[in-house]
Image (cartoon, rainbow, N blue to C red):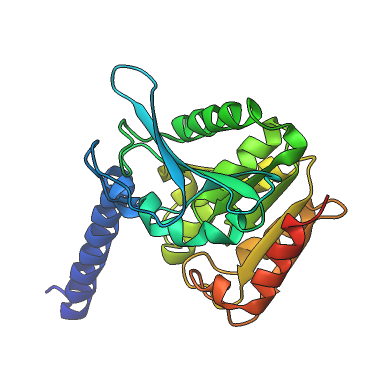
Length: 273
């Protein structure tokens, strides 16, 4: 006679195993939908930003079009240019609210949309993120010397910004809510899966920081629920002098600019010679 307890336990074990396998399959094949949340715009969509700007589209090939917006300095003196790499949601329009923090100090800002975001077209891959970032840098270096270029990354954009700063000279690298690498972000939510082997995207910020010669400043909040604060702490061993981590106690993922410490520190960085 079969043991009812054993049969019931075996049933539950099979159910849990099935859920685990199905979850892993979904993560592997649907990871782009899980990781990225773009909003696409029509090519003729008119941006209506209050700041003076220029909409630029660069055909990369027959399938890919890189779109970015060039925001002009609102100060009487142009001190340099900021290459801004935004997060994983929506498009440039969502992040344009941060532009005045730079333009009022005499910096132009080039903000790019990734493949599939906004007016940019193409299939998103990790290598393409790096290649497009380099295209933006080449546009900037044609106007400004390297010591007038600040590379800024927010959230998803931090790995892209760090990679660019590791292969090209700049005045400073600034990272807002960075990750150690992409697998570390997903592993926090799904610790039961070998995400390092399942993800198509690695973006190892920790690795790129080791090759950045420019000063690095990181902003991160202790209550960040999207990219937890320990990511920033794990990046500290790769710091050099005078790299720094600015810790915002109680800060979340998208509210660091409500903290006076963030504004004051950024203001001081933008005024450094």
